[in-house]
Image 1 (cartoon, rainbow, N blue to C red):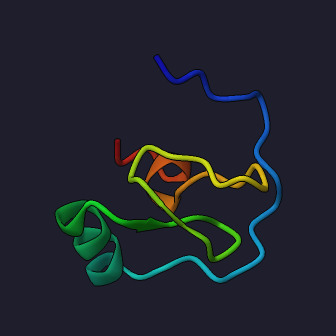
Image 2: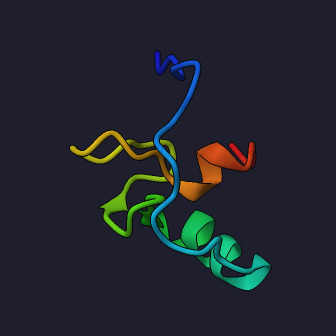
Length: 58
């Protein structure tokens, strides 16, 4: 079970658009808020969550 911390690190890259977010969800590979590739419900080694998690899409 994944537990979200109370506060994620500040995003280091711009928020993706709706089409990019849809592709991340469809492909099963998402971009973390620092640009790393992660699973859609994942967090990178640097502590940044996927955009899908941040935006509450999963």
